[in-house]
Length: 225
Ligand code: SAH
Image (tube, rainbow, N blue to C red; front, side, top):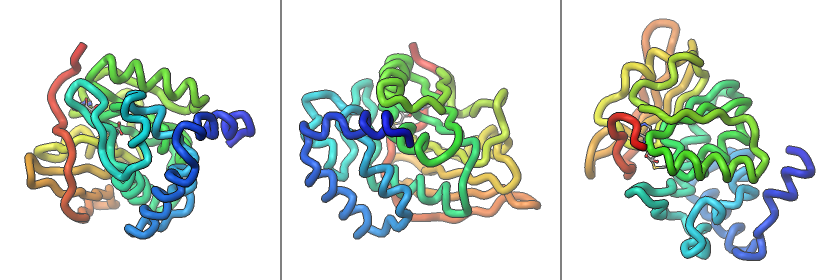
């Protein structure tokens, strides 16, 4: 991270006290997030810039918050946990994200991996997320307006894929777009019954790990203007 980026990240600290932000990091640590790099990136990423000003004072609570269009910014614990799972086997080059939303998870990821490719179906959310990342000078992200069920074939394969909305089944396109050894972190299920899964492309087929119950908004169909 350059000096300039560091300054940008610190901006706005006045709005939400440094202490509130430290408390969040402490809480994530106590809840089992152990990757120091992930904790550090969350510490310096200004989550209050990813929500409406009216909600900024709640930005460092460990909860999902509304971002309009019936969508939510992911809970910090989930962002941390999913990032940690992606990085568990070592550094990643190309990561595909499905469900840009506010761009908060995107911003966190962009500081942890080489390049992020992020797909969102709701144009207005994507536009806002793009602006925020430019403002924070996070430049290693490419955005696409489209349907995440299809992944992003043209730029495949990916070393990591993260899905931030719950899918009824694991999309076949995402499995197809995983590089050898590639890791897919995805909530699967519907309604109240959702499980976080880690799927890894092995030499022969895929291994699957079920990581526990989660709560996400649904992965819907098709792009929306
Ligand atoms: N990680 C985001 C979470 C946003 S909520 C954040 O922290 O802000 C999930 C997002 O997935 C929503 O923005 C929703 O519009 C998007 N989404 C749902 N179905 C999709 C699909 N089929 N393709 C792409 N994005 C989708």
